[in-house]
Amino acid sequence: MSKPNNQKIIDYTGPERIFSGVQPTGDLHLGNYLGALKKFADLQHDYECVFCIVDLHAITVWQDPKTLADQTRQIASAYLAAGVDPKKAIIYPQSTVLAHTELAWYFNCVARVGWLSRMTQFKEKSGKNAEAMSVGLYDYPVLQAADILAFKATHVPVGEDQKQHLELSRDIAQKFNHDFNAPGFFPLPEPLIKGPGARVMSLRDGTKKMSKSDPSDKSRINLTDDADTIAKKIRKAKSDAGEIPATLSEMEGRPELKNLVSIYSAFSGLSDQEVLTKYEGKGFGVFKPALADLSVETMHPITARMNNFLANPDEVDKILAKGAEDAANIAAPIVAEVRKIIGFWGA
Ligand code: AMP
Ligand code: TRP
Image 1 (spheres, protein in one colour):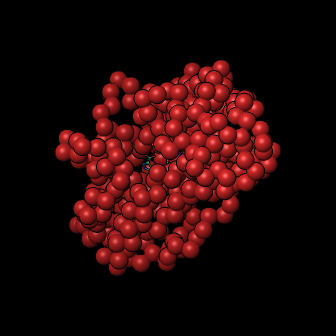
Image 2 (cartoon, rainbow, N blue to C red):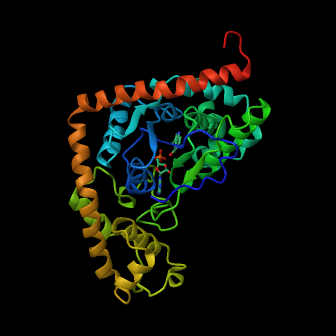
Image 3 (cartoon, rainbow, N blue to C red):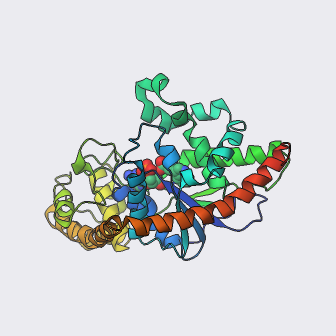
């Protein structure tokens, strides 16, 4: 993983720290793996890393109390299967560390209504029903800022869809530092988005992002899919009648081709151009089976490891309990300082 850009962590002199989170809702897919989990596993070798399962974010829409804890174990299992090592990185459920909700309240009083009203993800998720959504769903990005800044995290590996939320986190950090005359207290966290998996598109429509909420299961590769299913979904992925071109510019206007090439590139470590050079002039009849093989080769071991962890929930629970303790030990003193800075009695 290349060295993160430090330009914008203005005035902050504390250590570099990575924080990210995934919601325990629905099956994870290839987009989550390439956009998030794979980066987590890469970064843990070079940085102090904190990886959260954001169950407080999950309940901004209804979650069945009977399954929420299992959904949390499932994401933890996916982190572990993707290669996150609990000896190197902290893995824990958000609801176990009270610093998140406490700091979110303070940030509610820093963030402006106008800032939140510009968040495109809320608009996408609520559609024409904004009035009927929970206040939590609207406030979701403020809690996300609290997640990151409760750890004074400097870098946040996420998919491209989280860019706007990260900008909001920086605005909140900056306004807090400014309003309370505490220059450099919070870093201005930088997203780590680059890479071939930053925006994996649907296998049925190359203009739509691969998503848990797409009604068609064929649009995504789930981390729980078996080898046959993965191969079938890739072979049946939407494509066009053309051949694989020689140059990147010839991929313009061919979103499905672009998506499949970038998936190939993420799996193989080749650049998009190298993938084109390898398959130039060949049809999808050649390219898709090759991609199917490569996908199975990469994804199948992860699925197998994930199933292994799912079959051993006690082991996962131990990791989460230890992670919760370690996470609280970092976040509690930071939030205690925030109380002092705000000027609360007894702080
Ligand atoms: P979510 O499942 O929405 O909680 O997303 C978890 C992580 O996966 C976040 O970092 C997202 O940005 C990332 N992610 C979700 N969908 C995609 C996608 N289609 N391509 C790349 N990254 C994604
Ligand atoms: N909003 C993120 C998503 O939907 C999940 C998330 C919550 C997160 N808190 C975070 C990601 C903090 C990075 C850092 O994918």
